[in-house]
Length: 436
Image 1 (cartoon, one colour):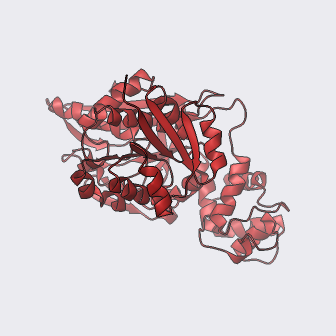
Image 2 (cartoon, rainbow, N blue to C red):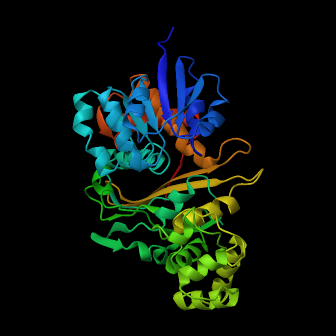
Image 3 (spheres, helix red, strand yellow):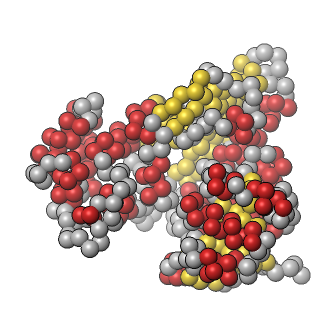
């Protein structure tokens, strides 16, 4: 009989269910679902007979230590800013950790301690980051093994299938990438203007904009020969201009506003908008007039489309906002209310790596790896499946001793990636490879 394993899952958001489902396929695995609000943990755990819900505040060190010490492995699906607290506790009690978040400098600082204690702390094992790394490294390794060189690399209406706050914060990130050997930097205020058309198959016409800092991936993916490295985000056409207006008028500001504090008087969206723009009138015609002045480069039908969208969100209305201290979080509350998936609706995730290749014989080729996944109502969304499943797989591979590397790790090597890719294929998660 297999040895019983006790696993701690911290967080129960959009992507947690597929992780839980995968882990609890194995009868020896017992899972504790921990959230600050016990009701959230109970909602997830009630579907699984070997899952136990508990309340946990990770900012309380003694409380966190007491729970971590009782488990064999910790999964952290909470905001990345809290991961260092979890990692610190896990190292104290010699527990392995898995996260789906980017590995921050603070998280990397635990590398020596993790190695000294023989621990595996695996990060970036979701979709983006995660599956994108797995298949990028796979293709690049195949190119190098065939004696070729990579000359360039360019991977990846909206509803929320993951944290709305995370979506909005990402829209303010600055970006950096390598283009023909030169570093290009784009400040967050200009990120949406940088979007360019990107086509996948004949049916999909997207806009693509750079995602964070692409420059380290020349080293991470072992491509010393490459001159262009760009990781990007894909969105439907119209998304970037709408977001640009929200950014330019100040609705993504995450500083506290007294008039939005929970103790403040009720306030309508049209009054919030007037405050943001800096005018005394809250009439829709005056609000539109001043917004038009703030975005002179957007005109005509495109501007009218954006105004219709703002009206649909209720930004010109008498409807009171859900006050959340900051404009960003107040907007999040409205978006979450208006932009959740309805019954029977499904999401779509599309990810593409595109490599310009010089073969050993000197011929130029384009290699693409494309992942297209749809949600399956009433089951998990595509986003949840593609983040939660690789996370669950990584947990099981660590428990089984297949992934043995120690330290603070990311999936940039075949030794870690290949067994995860093999397990993903068994779950029906694969890419279509083409050479042109």
